[in-house]
Length: 341
Image (cartoon, rainbow, N blue to C red; front, side, top):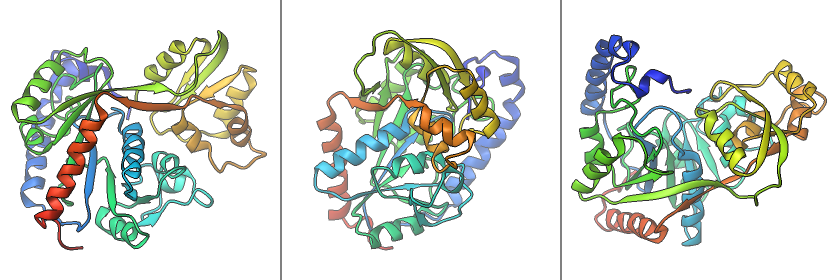
């Protein structure tokens, strides 16, 4: 979802007006945690989650983690809710037959490199993955959902937007009270420079709980371009990040069109972009939503014409983070903490 501006201000009248709803949300969230029956998966589950609503960088982190685990001779599978898709699941994403309308844009994008399973019930998705030979699961989002036990909770936070005004939804971006989250997280990964005012407190609190704080950066994988005029377009939670990445790569932005997060492009949208006559460039996630469009349609032509700015995550001291995850997996299995399907 796109982040409303009032999430960054504790004094904004909209945030203040929503305080009663935030209090109601707090009560419902606490009741959900107290009443939930947690299932034990029988296989290692690493949750890549965040503390706030909106984009924090989970998807590139999931990609990075899958690659790291595979390098350690594990067989990772990704468990996703399938947000934005109409398929209920559980099912394995197949790029030959599925589109983003079926399974969601992020699962479809991730499925280009890794086995991805979608469904609201992650336990059912896990069973399918195990049948296919997966031996470690990466749960994409769902840190606040207590229905499935996790071996390790890797929490992502954006260095620029941090925790916003530190209020609970809908008056702020927090999905869960911090005291509850701090008891569960196993490591914090700050993406980008930690410039937001809330991050000093957060990092100190995490370390006070005896948990490590790591830093990383999402960067384009291609070499810097000579100044080239482009028209960028995207439908992501933080379009300004994409624009900044283009500028950092040396592109001259002559046009920029931002759509709502997870926006499903229409042929009318595609035709407008094509009619601009500009060189077009977009994100990997946006291109996933154009995947499977009929070749003769405006969307199909846009998919063929638009370039992609590929990105990857770089983590400082990544060996320490992977070792911490591996140790948690080994400890959980040795103590038979997760013994049943």
